[in-house]
Amino acid sequence: MVVASAANFDMVDYSNLADQLGESVECFVFDSIPSTNDYLAQQAFCKKTQVCITAEQTCGKGQHDRRWLSQKNSSITLSIRYVFPSHISLSGLSLVAGLALVSVLAEYDIAGLSLKWPNDVYVGDRKLAGILIENSLQGAYQSAIIGVGLNVDFDQSFQCDTPWVDLKSVTLTPINQLDLSRRLINKMLAYMEMFESRGFEAFYAKWAAQDYLLGRQIRHTNQAQLFSGTCLGVDRQGVLLVDTQYGIKRIYSSAFLQFD
Image (cartoon, rainbow, N blue to C red):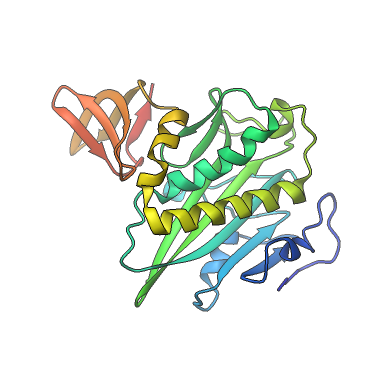
């Protein structure tokens, strides 16, 4: 099913995306919407996988209440709501979503692709994409809303605190935004199915090969727990490991982390 707020798109038309995702996926398409994550969160709970995609997101959200900035038709902005049984641990889910993105983007001959724990895709030292996951529990089930923002073709004068890059700056491969969106969604759904049956363990080796922070110096700035050390990668649940003078610390959130 497709729900659209406008029939015409300036540069990219997602109106037939649902036909490329299969009958098991409910697809909502918009020309402009405040937040794709919020839209799916407002839908009545159902076990069917749902996708929301838009040409423009006016109030996009990033990690730790930050805003996700974007321009109309300049990025792929979508969310997927995937339902898991409540007994499944979702530890490492954002890492798996990132691996799905990198798996597809690697086909565009991009040099220097990596994943910055827990939710960013980088090219060199610049951010190409971000992921935001919001979970909720409904009885015997839990739904994960996985938001993705991928820079495709930005105005180079665009101002942002985080150094950024877009796809058209790092690849000579032609980009069809509709086709890329379809491939990203289908790859993420395939990885979600594997994660549901096998957990992060199935992706542990893949993450190690893409780890942006491995070997880098990290500082934890929470006043209740100040320390610095060297990133050792992640454990088999996707938890960040840091080698410090106090021993190996396990980090579950990036809220108080700074990276040298």
